[in-house]
Image 1 (tube, helix red, strand yellow):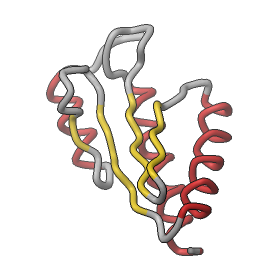
Image 2 (cartoon, helix red, strand yellow):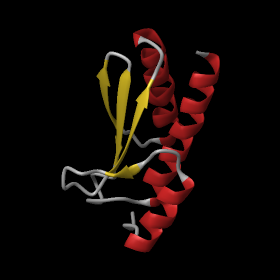
Image 3 (cartoon, one colour):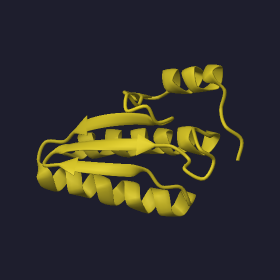
Image 4 (cartoon, one colour):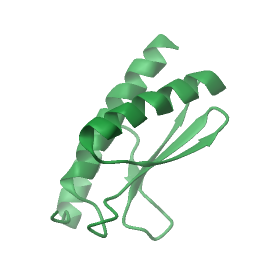
Length: 102
């Protein structure tokens, strides 16, 4: 897999909803989502897990009651790839859908 350039990463982030470069020094992007309650957050995580399995690409997810943090990077490539931007866009769709039904 080919790593994205800084310009490609910037362009990709502009098309995503609420994603930013991770501040922990890793070459990753992250999005924090607040759901109405714990169970709606768990349902969102389950939806993302199914989408990740279909894509064969998996985000790191941190659940803190109703706050879900998604971290996206391609560990095997050592940074961000097109697959990360594609899965982030799919996560955006799932978040939007989950919030509209919450």
